[in-house]
Image 1 (spheres, rainbow, N blue to C red):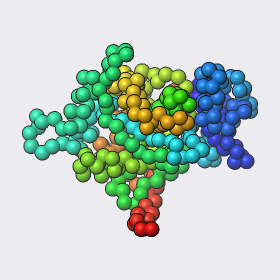
Image 2 (image 1 turned 180 degrees about the horizontal axis):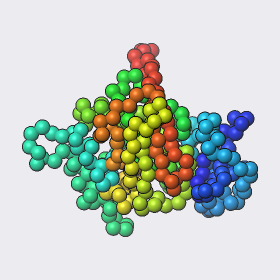
Image 3 (image 1 turned 45 degrees about the vertical axis):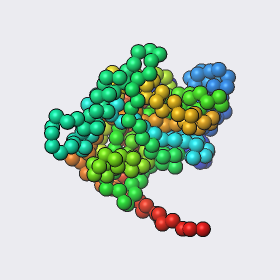
Image 4 (image 1 turned 180 degrees about the vertical axis):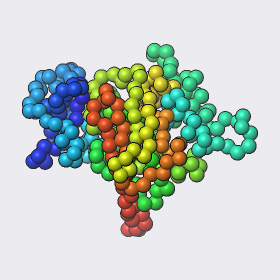
Length: 329
């Protein structure tokens, strides 16, 4: 089942559900997937079962909603400060190549970069036996719900940025239950937008490079992540394809299990605060930046995987960074 959120013609929020190839229909009695998920948990149901219990109403054309700019991210929080966007890197087979080229040490070619060391750690210990804890991955923070961009909306790049590049990924979506238990709602397409030029200056600038917005959706796929996810990442410029490449995800194409990545995020009590939402991006091995592409305003990023419903599309837009001077009180 696929879930999505949108605005109806009056501007009111609606939740939609469908199976692949079928029409999306309004889920009765709820206006946020957040509320639907907590309701399901409180009654001991899964999300799909709760949708069935709520009942479905009129059919809605998702393509029309997308064209009208009325699609919302498939998860949000009424208070954006209670939504956290985070991610893990060097998690996919082949994902170290571009990073290693960016961080390569001068001198001895036999000396492993820190990126390659981290990648090798994942290869050696990122898929532990059931019940065991594996090696912790690289981890980064992107922001709160203020940095979560709706499908179709511009991805804003601050005017101090040196680059604005896509990272096509799969995102896990979670809500923390009242007792502190992380509840996984499902998975969505993601664009973990980053500044790769800043990162290339020095890998210790990774944290700076990741403080950019991200987009997920348009649809949330309920259930387990397929072991082999195959999609396409492309950039459109003036309606024509500027760059295109397949991307792979799912555990068959990763050096870590999803469970291991989840464990090393939610082991921190900070990330188990009741009512909070988490969007966690699991990494990628495909970047246009690694192929020498320089993006510009108006370029449209597209991430598409057939099993995840509609593709995720967002144009790039440079925006003023705003005031940063501190005023003493």
